[in-house]
Amino acid sequence: MSYRYEIIRAVVRQGVIAIIRTADTASAVEAAVPLLTAGLTSLELPLTNPGALDAIRRLRADHPHAVIGAGSVLDEASAVAAVRAGAQFLVAPNLNTSVIRAGHRHGAAVLPGAGSVSEVVQALEAGADAVKVFPAPTPRWVRDVLAVLPHAPLVPTGGVAPADVPAWLEAGAVACGVGSALARTPVEEVTALLRA
Image (cartoon, rainbow, N blue to C red):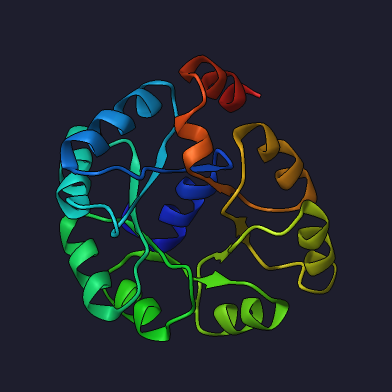
C-alpha cells in the first residue's frame, strides 16, 4: 500500500481501529500481537505512549500485512517522526492543518479530530482522509451529521466498546476507534466481532 486511498480503505475495512495504550515498547508489542493474530488489521499507537515510535517500527517490520498508525499526533514534528518510524496513518484528537499537510507530504493518511459539525466540515476542507469524532457522541449524532454531510467518513472514538461497533457502523460510521475496552475484551470475542 503506497497510496493514501489504499491506506484509508485498509484502515477502515474491518470497522475497528484498535488503540494500543501501554507503558513501553515491549508491552505495546505484547498487547498488539494477540489482536493481530485474532485477525484485526488496523492498529493505532498513541504518541503519548512511551516508546510508541519504536513499537510502530517493530510492528511494521514484524507484521507487514497490518496497517499501523500513530495517534495523538498534535504537531508537524510529531507527524514527520511518526511517518519516519513507519506509521501509515496519523490520528489526532484535534484539527491541526500542519499535521494533515505533513502526513500527506509523506504519504500517510490523516484522521484529525472533530467534536462538532463545523469542525467536521473544516477537517474535510483541510483534506482529512477521514474524521475522528472525539469524544464519541451517539450513533444518532452520526446519523444526523450524515443526513447533511453524507460524504463525511466519520470514525467515532472514545468510550466505544467492541460490542457497540455494529450500532455505530449501522449509523453510518466508516470505523470506530476502540481502546481500553478492547484491551479488556477476550481475544475470542474480538475474533467473533471481526467475523460478524
